[in-house]
Length: 607
Ligand code: F6R
Image (cartoon, rainbow, N blue to C red):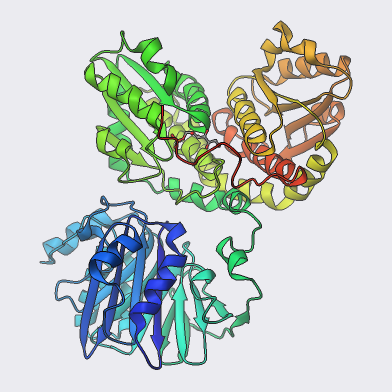
């Protein structure tokens, strides 16, 4: 996730306006920043790695001439955060500049073809192919907008782009597919941005650009066309009545809720990861004598789910270990045949890095799954995969958890395929269901959020909760409990449902709330038995069930239905979403700030 912004002013200098708008988009990415302006038929570019303030202190981002310009604040996906990989990117002749938010899936093929035709690339980014493609189309005699359209027709993936060119110095051409793009319309200026807060102090009139549309900005006028058939689209600006603070959270009251709602789009991004890195990681896992999945907190819960995925799909045992325990538990036995897959949203968690360091010293192989390219984990790992969820501001991990699950399930699936442990039909079914996951989650959020708010209202004063699940749903129980405890400050206990009768059941008294996670997998029958045990002792049952599961619905005091027919190994992805929403609304009901829970930090860099 990156932020893009640009403007065409009637008068004045674009660069300072771009600079302050990018500051408002910094939450979307902050590892490098750049601006390009067009002035007297020349491009002027300043860009570097680092936070906006750091780059401004070095280069003065306000000091570029011209009333037209584009800017970018980056969250690295392809290519580490170096100056050369910072946007804007240019063509061979440095006449065209492009900023881009999204992922070009077929960039490697396009780049190879362009290089064969003599184009010289400067960066390792996927974005640069767009500049060179437009360059080719322009030499064929097309206008800038037509050239952008032709280039984008060759591109597979997601994008919000903006292009300026010295060949048409009065225009900015923008386009979008699956990445956000809005245009701001003012008396004396036109703006585009990834997000409304970037221009809200300047205008509250906005035009939302839809998928596969191009918008041509030109001195106070704009023209929207559909990319597939070049049809003209008439769309008037709408008035936005958000305050600046509301706009930063896109109208949501908290970042956590916004991030829960972002999960469909984050999951779509995890389906576009670079094949070569997933394959390489699979190779290391395949060859390892033993595999440890090392992480803390929510990332550890993802690892527990992953251990079921590897076991069920690839028939391969992996060991999820809490990072802070790794050195004590395995520090002496880990060796050259061991592989550690470290899972860390931030890539900076001290406990996780300490476990890796111990393993590295004993010649083990270290792999990483993280959300932050350029983090320590990406530097120490032999291979890393970036989960591409975009920055997560809420302290409680939500969108990054479901994205981790998606990537880990893809790794387990690849290993299963490679080892011939899974049938063709199962592979196709899993791949298909992974593709459907964003829509399934969208539907849960759309149809169940209000009900979860009501359930939270009903149970807000309960002093303790149980979360129970069997098999892979145990990981979901753990994550539901962690969310509730950390943001609503309600003590909660999570167990494999079968284990509860070995002790914790003594806590149950009439009205004690027990949340059961009940997908219709092999554990379903035994879970019903566990529900009966709790009910017999007067517990209030809140059940997460698949649609049409009348048996469990009839036993539950409250239930939430989730799409049916999911493969067992993918069920944690949709089943955790109601628990995130429940924890969120419990926090709101109990007057706690879900974005900033007490005593916690987003990145824990002490041991
Ligand atoms: C819980 C949460 C924490 C983190 C943990 C590990 O909502 O966010 O439990 O999951 O501190 O952080 P990363 O994944 O950055 O290593």
